[in-house]
Length: 257
Image 1 (cartoon, helix red, strand yellow):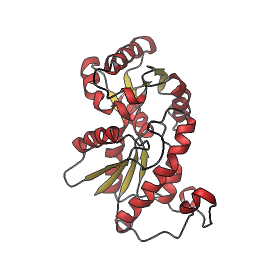
Image 2: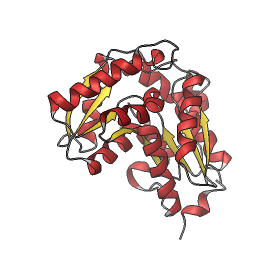
Image 3: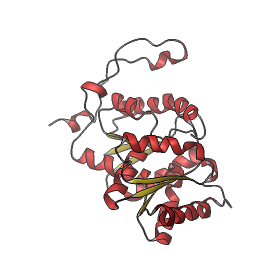
Image 4: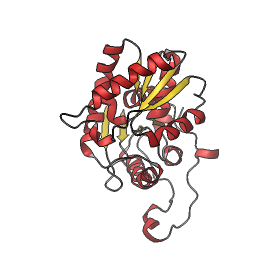
């Protein structure tokens, strides 16, 4: 099984960290290919960043289809380009916010999301509504730690995030925590040990979900909303993204019964 983990930003050190976390939890024989696009923003901290990260993300999904990848993880808590990626992919495509919220909802009656910048809080609330998670999500809390500070040596990021998680448990009455940024993946185990409650980060949750769906021989529906993009020629700088006929995928037979 080959799972492509796509960090939609271009910061390779974050991609490498996500890849390490994902490989620690997958089953023997599952290969995790962790990549960043060659174009796009170095971090995703708003709608503009998200929009301009999407072409590079979709290029990686299209390449994965040619490489025989069985499924994909979109490793950004905004789940950018998720539905468009599903149009391109035969195998399952899971966003890390989608995965983390669903996992938290079966581990506890309520959770709080602890994320990075205040400006992204409403983005997280919109996702909770989209995924039917608002009845579980007690609050979305910002730490105002920039994404690129999360893995910097000497950064106070871990302490700040831990303190905010503690406040979420006390002030929101939540029984679990969702970490609202893929860059927090390597902090998860330490925070859970210190708090003594379920702490969910979406990178590992999404990888295991994709792995399970592939093992069940379940792929993305190819009729209706997630059918292949309609054939047409795009203009200007996006000409190379023009939809074409689907090419044979070595993994496609895995999803046929």
